[in-house]
Length: 103
Image (cartoon, rainbow, N blue to C red; front, side):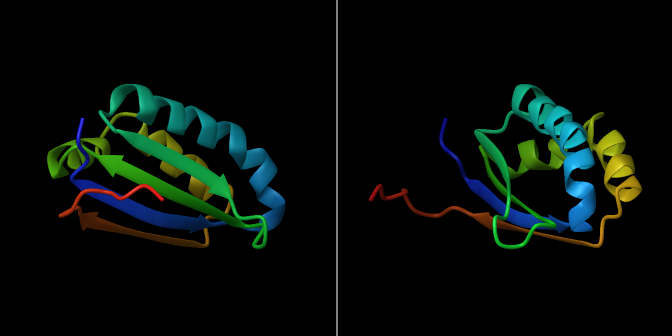
């Protein structure tokens, strides 16, 4: 399946809350990967900024991304993110207009 939308973003939490937050993030990511039609949905903690979680996403189209944003597992994740002290959230989506080049 060809990706036409890429999303990159991050969430920032108090560093001391990351360990307790990760099981909730794992449930959310697994649900997204299994049910939302994404091509790629990856997250990772930043090794140099202990409170930062980075997201990389590829979607087949804007409609799939829009459906993801209102999926049933979004709200429980947002509740947990708030509970564990979400400080900052930034996500940007991009339309992919060329073929990826592997290096």
